[in-house]
Image (cartoon, rainbow, N blue to C red; front, side):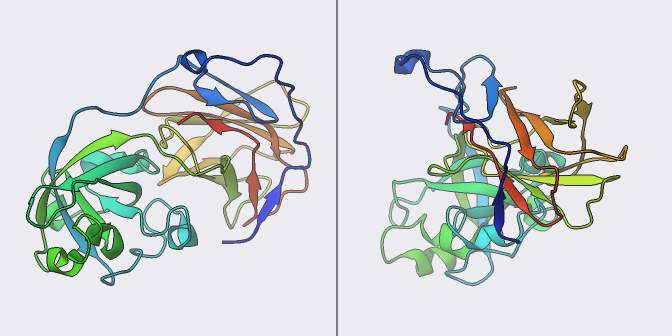
Length: 275
């Protein structure tokens, strides 16, 4: 993936008051933009049954890219060794991309009591993932970490195992939401990939506002974590508003994509949701 660029139009909002933790709003206001929505927690307190397998090399990070479109991001921190493909019931035709889950195996003789956090980056459409099953096909590294220290290889030798899972908030360690302009984008067809979304991790809808316009235009979900807008010509800088699928939280990144944007560039906002 091409190196990151920063929005030249970013501005900072002053913080006038310190809020108690119990009153913190649902998203971080760290720069040019705003976030709204009632406070909520994406964390599911209940564990649910599922099955798991692994793919790729034994200590590998999983497949390159995947059906969510994250490309080489899956090979580097913070996604590195935390990726996984999920069955259609969790993939949700791509709207489940970016969601985070805690997964734990059940055999006390070999399984660690600590759960592994995985990020949905790919789909497992057939085989053990078909028929409405809830299944995780994890990278070799993530699967091995389900075991106690030194027993990762023994656990991988078992192939398919029973696990429990629950939804958890995504945390990308200080990163802000970024928008990657996909290759092939033009002033008549703009395609964006959302990266590093804290909290819900998923996307329910996206809108774009052009320069000198008050109108928000609905973007269309194409596949994975990719959204597009076709009417043109489109004139930047662009503001982007996204709403999460799970919690209906809204975030607006003002002028995050500059007037002189280029395909294959990544533009980082100055805000993110609170995880």
